[in-house]
Length: 320
Image (cartoon, rainbow, N blue to C red):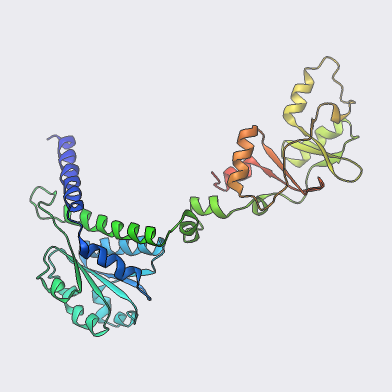
């Protein structure tokens, strides 16, 4: 049995289903977008079985892209959760056949709330289709399963149409990355758009020594600071230079090397600094990588040290 061929046939069938559906998008779909766009309340998705699982994913997509939404199970709706539907809401009911018993049983009650009902079904004359104000048809020539029975092409198309609705709404609302990140503060994008240098920089126990210090004292400061670096300051505590363990290693090959040398002799004068603690941590990472440094010193405009940001901290916090 050639599983590779079977997999290719499955994907081709489902892909063709989507391509066919793309040619059938009509005014009803546009009206559905407008109804949801004008919704003053919540978008409620309902369905059972495979349709219910697709509906739950659709609700999650809508909710994370600017359309307040949640999934309502028909059985739970019959036992009190119908109270979650209120004035100004819009309901999307999903049933490929349009005759799901559990869903059909709540349709008359949904209509009592006088809210728009959008049906997603293959048959606009079905029970779901008859109760719906708008019907987005699920046109499927063939399920991808070998017995043309298990919901495969139909669920794929339903999910894709839900995505299409969400994308239309995003464009209509001019939904941006920053908006998306607002709903995903714990995700990679949220970290990229919200975490600032001030949130991650180390402020306490900084390895700081006088610019008059000897190299042996600077090495001790580097070891104790555990940042691979020490900061050299003048009498007014203003940043003058930076000495890294790399600088020390390079110093070792100097013919006139001595631990009694001034640390300043081997330090990097006027090191790269950040004077804006409100800078995004992701932008700071770009700067660190571009300059090929490990430590970014955060100062004010007068070179007073406010903190330091190490590349390892950015990596540990998942900044990219």
